[in-house]
Image (cartoon, rainbow, N blue to C red; front, side, top):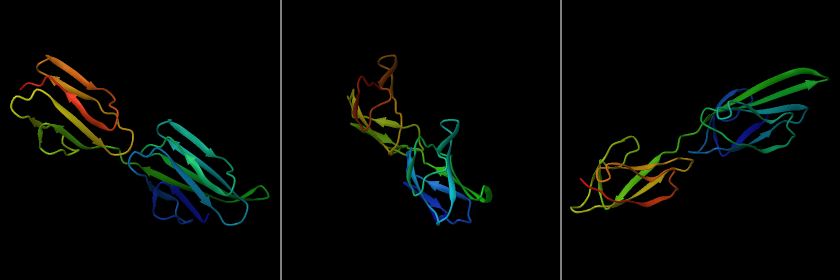
Length: 190
């Protein structure tokens, strides 16, 4: 092999035919990439396999892939999946050489990046690693609107109002649709 490239994706270290283990970092929330494999002239057989955590099994991308291997799609990716490229050189049915290259995927999990209330001041300021806040509203306020912003990627968000006025929890939205802009939260009391 001369090169293996992913789009999207940044591999480390850069491809070297004598290095067999790599990290492939994909953008936050990415669920697919495409692989392009370039080889030297000669009779080389290439197989590409996706070791899928989501599927709980191996998924064949291609066996005896047809060259040029350009942009084979690899869908349904999750963090810690592996992509395995096996390259075999055979002469008259005899395996002269076989090399196995493995890319371990690093896909950061999408997270909330901001939560804002209007009216209202939250304390402390929003931080994705802080999970409890105080929301101060102007005197006499009985409603506010919440706007939630997230990083790209699949992220399920539920908003629940723990309501003293209602005497129970009130669902504002389940599996809220992004962008979450100004969901009203009524019937607020101290």
